[in-house]
Amino acid sequence: MCLIMLDMLMERGISLEKAISIVQLEKKTLSLELIHLDNAYGRILANPLNSKVNDPRFDNSAMDGWAVRKEDCSEGNETILQIVGISQAGNSESIRVGPGEACKIMTGAPIPIGADAIVMIEDSRPDNENVIILGPARRTYIRKKGENISQDEQVLSKGHYMDAASISLAATMGHETIEVFCKPVVGIISTGNELAMPGSEIKESQIYESNSFGIAALVEGIGGKPIRYETVTDSVEELRNSLDRATENCDLIITSGGVSMGDFDIVRKLMELEGEVAFWRIKMRPGGPPLFGKWKKTPIFGLPGNPVSSHLVFSMLVFPWFTASFGTHKNSKLTLGKKVRVKMLNDVKGAPGKLCLRRIKITNDTEGLIATTHTHQGSGNIHSMVAHNGFTLLPPDTDANIGDIIDAFWSN
Ligand code: AMP
Ligand code: MG
Image (cartoon, rainbow, N blue to C red; front, side, top):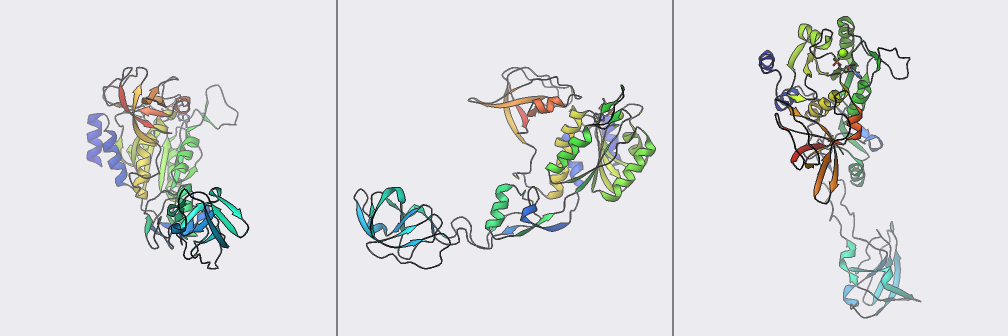
């Protein structure tokens, strides 16, 4: 860790890639818990999930119509078949369809013995005990047993993010409960003498504290459990006490503010004196001065106080800590967005020696993805994160001009 620190001081920050690899080494081994499907949204599977059943469980009809023998129906001609019964979803009685016979059938109902095709109800006309078949009899209207999933097949893998469809799938496979990773508990501490809580009376020299709320939402969105601690002033003692409290309860600590070069940047000061610093500063703008290390036994991110910086550093650097801890696959649905190529419709300036993340609005055009900038780009302007839906990934020392196609991150 000390070597990296030296390296970083000499380079005035390390690359984002290097920072991510360091962060991921400090991933947390999370315990498991068994939860009901009702509570599964947004959780991460801790073990693969196999199906308890075939899906479909039995051959059944994809249409409301008639179960028939295909050879009895000649396409293009009307056929008269005798009705022998009705197959309803949930029926367990076995019905037999013989030559010249048809059984009325509902979507999802079992296919009667002897039938091998379905005629849609719209392609028929009832005639007392008979039905007159007017349209085609199709074998493809039968959903075959196990054609989606076979019994015992491993369908979801460890690290899978449980979105709505995955929850339905787990239920389809017969699981009432699933084993997931316990949510990592993340303590969030904002620092700064100028901070007042939203809703409280505010003095002329104060601003509303916003970072802890946004960071808590980010933590929650990726399957963590945020604890927002009380804001601390720019006092080393207060910060030390708060960090000590957080380290008792949390798997990860995130601080906001106090990591730059200012006289009152106490997170950096305290970490350098009493903590363990793995790196400080990355070659990225905005979001240059983050710090990562350990306070006592707990990994800690010191995020910059500027609201845009803290959000962007979370996306680029803190998120990889979560994916490493969850063992998330590259193609997982647990993402904060995706890397895309966009065509710029206006010029954007890059940054000397740093990866540059300018907020952009990405839209889908007939030609592909296009991007524009709207609001003021300052790292203090959190509105720029709401007015835009992505950001550039401009390599160091690279500007983008109108018409250039560049890498970007689309947080749609
Ligand atoms: P710092 O990183 O502490 O030097 O703060 C950089 C800028 O971000 C300053 O303008 C601070 O007032 C602002 N800031 C720091 N912490 C927060 C916070 N929790 N919420 C909103 N703004 C903040
Ligand atoms: Mg500060």
